[in-house]
Amino acid sequence: MEAHLTFFRGDNWESVIFYILNLFGVFVMSILVEWLSHTRLINSDIKYHVVAGLVQTGLYSIRITLAYFVMLKVMSFDVGVLAAAVAGYTIGFLIFGSRMFDKQDTASYQKPTDLPPLNC
Image 1: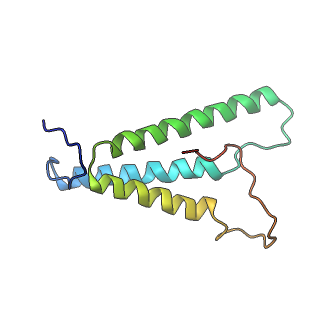
Image 2: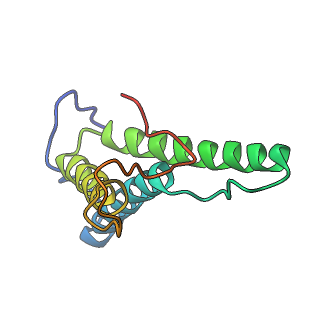
């Protein structure tokens, strides 16, 4: 098996269908990371803070796990995988993180989140 230290075009995949499924998986995982980063899933009026903290911690661990899976796929140095990850993160941010689909018009509006965005 050949190890690449630079980006390459994936020619060594067993089949085109397998390669496209891999690209689609990376795309979906990166959209899910953005969704978990920018979506409010826990009700702030919850009475049981321990339960809310455990749910928030579980969601954080899912988000970080997905982000590491995307990172490991990108570390294959395949340009198609990199493009799928960037496209997924971009579409995910456009849908969930930008104000493009917000219903509110106020300039001072800040979307509430349970989880802070991933810091680079």
